[in-house]
Amino acid sequence: GAGVSQSPRYKVAKRGQDVALRCDPISGHVSLFWYQQALGQGPEFLTYFQNEAQLDKSGLPSDRFFAERPEGSVSTLKIQRTQQEDSAVYLCASSLGGDRDTIYFGEGSWLTVV
Amino acid sequence: GNSVTQMEGPVTLSEEAFLTINCTYTATGYPSLFWYVQYPGEGLQLLLKATKADDKGSNKGFEATYRKETTSFHLEKGSVQVSDSAVYFCALSDTGYQKVTFGTGTKLQVIP
Image 1 (tube, each protein chain N blue to C red):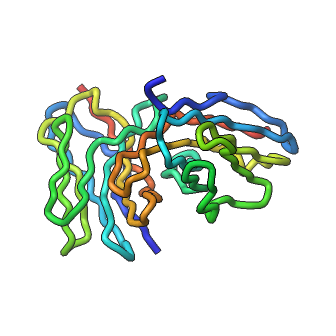
Image 2 (image 1 turned 90 degrees about the horizontal axis):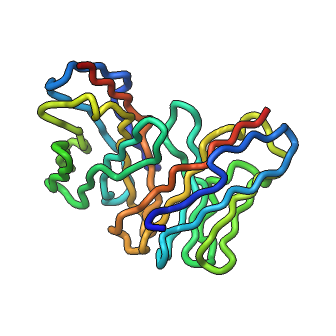
């Protein structure tokens, strides 16, 4: 497709379950980002990939959060043993990679942990 | 570290009113500045951007000017419409790989 695609759009998980969120960036985009947006807040940076290399994971809140992009295109954000405070919208974004290039965001995956 | 401060909402305006949403920033380098918009039920969309001092970003009647001396990037529109109702985020990036720091967002509601 033309834009950044994320799935699932909505996910309800029981506390303690593992979840996996998928991101399909725009074709040819080198840079890929994951953000977490809590209700009523601005997005917070989680992690950054340049192709398949994860160059910054400073925003991941705990070791329960793990992201990968093994072939430099599709990325998966995995959250293990989900907790209620993980409830948020998880946004994926991509860009061509130049430092002034436009960043395009997906519609997000809404995670609710009950 | 980097931070963005924007005026708290919600902001409620009548159609055709003038809009200003204030935004100031703190950055360690020389950032690019952005306004993003999030319509109800939709993802973040880039509204406008400016990459250097005194640049004016504009789109859909919205404007913002990069003011380095006051570290500000206020969003303005001369005449708002009901369809402009959304949440507006001021943001910056100043790393080599575009790590974006967002403000908390300002909800705008335009009533007929």
